[in-house]
Length: 151
Image (cartoon, rainbow, N blue to C red; front, side, top):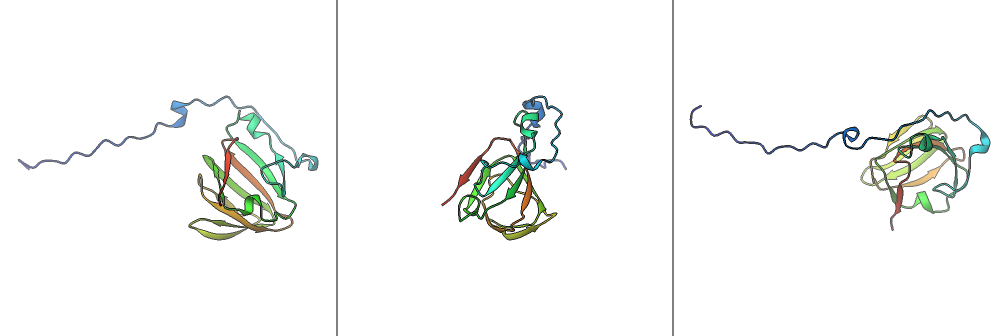
């Protein structure tokens, strides 16, 4: 193919893996056994109690894992308002009961015992309702993050 010019492609820049650019702090072994008295008020939502699983301390703030127990009606505050979490990763697993939640652009979903989902970073969502026995396992990266309420 004499005389044919070949088009050159622009170089594609790929992000280096996190481990190569930012070493993580050393993690510690951690065990959390179930104890009813470990469910505490004072978490993100006033209608829920939280059982911290000790993962944030063991990973030096890299990951938070907790069990969320919905113990009171939310009365239209907090999770029932449209909001998002400024996170890198968020996974939720329903341990007991059910939870109905709406995700912007995706619609409304009812999650039942055994349901698991990933919430992409900053996805706008709102909890619509939940059963009296709703209990969730939530894993979030990083351990400390912002929740942004929307009008």
